[in-house]
Image (cartoon, rainbow, N blue to C red; front, side, top):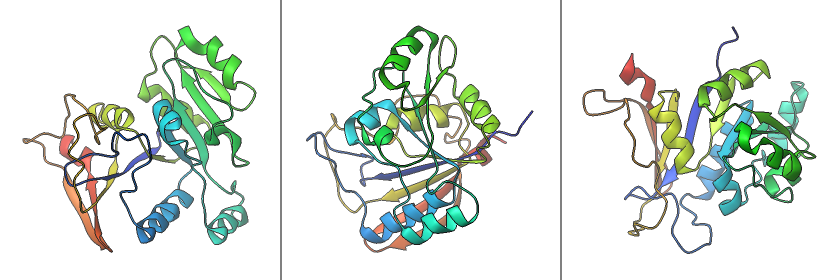
Length: 228
């Protein structure tokens, strides 16, 4: 069996743990220097995954921005940006969203059997729709991505995806950037939601690195160390 991809969660959050506010406009938590760091990380992975709600809420392109990094990938025989991946419970996705309409790269959508037909109707012409069974299991997603040649997967949100990967003990690394302000709105989305996490007080994660990047700080944790 092909080894599952190495899974890296990438997130920026306020000091009080929010990844956005509740205004309907994207909240910029990081700074230009850190955005460039994220672009470098993107250039080094094989696929980027976000949840369907992130596509609807943030409309991300999920492309490598730097010309030099895109060229370096192509010089290695790779697409200029990584494969784009999403998970949707409903299959209700907009084919004009930037996730689907930008970048000459593959797009893969994992959906449960009950909504596979809906997903094929909505985005089947602009992506590969995968019927993942009665419920989309992230272990299945990782196994399928491995068969597609993905060795390193970057998960960029949102909170539901981060929660599910961590609760299932499927995340190998977390890049957590802390922004120097508070959101203070319980209606806003957080880094993770309620769940039973293996990484609890009795199983503390390993802090692998701390890096100041302008006015934010990057904390790199190894969550699976806690459960081994």
